[in-house]
Image (cartoon, rainbow, N blue to C red):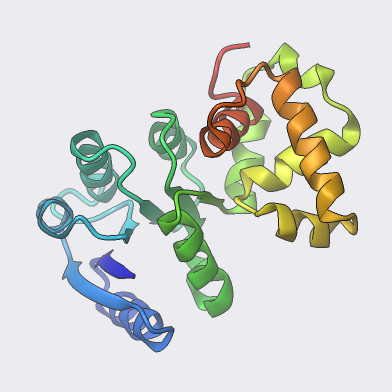
Length: 217
């Protein structure tokens, strides 16, 4: 994979570059400010990028703004956002465009090498990767969606793990059920949420947005 790393802290940026390259991927560019990040995304259109939310010059949400601007120009451009803390507003802004290929992790996740690389690869493949803490924060303040009441307890469990970005295979391992059972629950919950069956990847994204209270009831 061709990857852009945008992080203003040298030690963390260098550590991520070394980790990514150790797993056989290529870092095509690094950036330390919001404007540099946007320029790099426009130039390289990477397979995935890792972007810190808060970057110079304002140390507010420069990184996120660069990611959103790039995804506006190149819909679906895969981005994995890193944040020191769960910032609900930022997570919502990233997710509500409805496109796939997004991730939002806490920075501490970088220190779990396999987990971090797995998240990168899932986002690059057009999936989602959300830190469980981000999911919990969004759920705690999300608006009620009556469609979720139609789901069984097992279907809600499957959907919750789907929100974290887990594949059907990973979900079956987490819940100790067969992959065919996960597929059955997934198909069922898509139907109950009123999601058409013409685009499975998009249905997963829309199901997650519904679960997190980011779509209408």
